[in-house]
Length: 169
Image 1 (cartoon, rainbow, N blue to C red):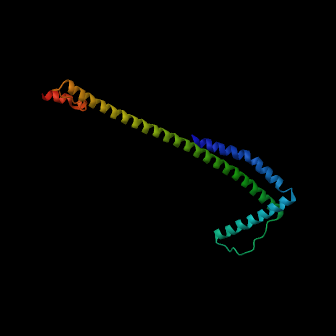
Image 2: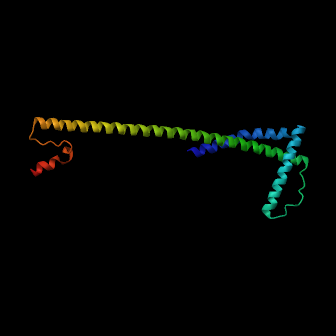
Image 3: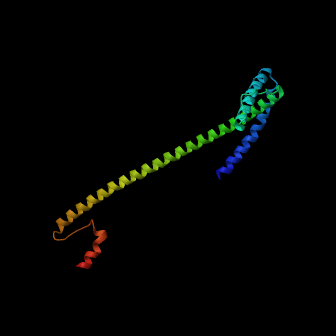
């Protein structure tokens, strides 16, 4: 039940974030200082990915890497910024969901502990009542022996073996 809702939420989040990411891409190339900044980011990213690909495929990594032209660098950086934005929003959503879930679990655990404490307390109360009843039974046996001296009273075991004594006599 929860998995389809999560998938639907993720899809909705990505759908809402794409126009924002596209707007970032669009405005990234217009401001000169920001343009130079993203070109530098794109060049660094290009060098890292090229070196990584060369290492994966077992090629030489000490070869000079040609830099991207400005337009391609701006486009690559804008794409990178858009993806970073999408992933950061998705990451924030995941972190929020994990925190919400952990708070919910903590509340459930606290409720379970309270219920367990209530059960323990009730058990202690019942044990106290049982002891009180045992004392009253003992007092009744003493009073009964005083009033009827020759009778034998065994209230403690009357619930389990009283019928067998009658059959033996």
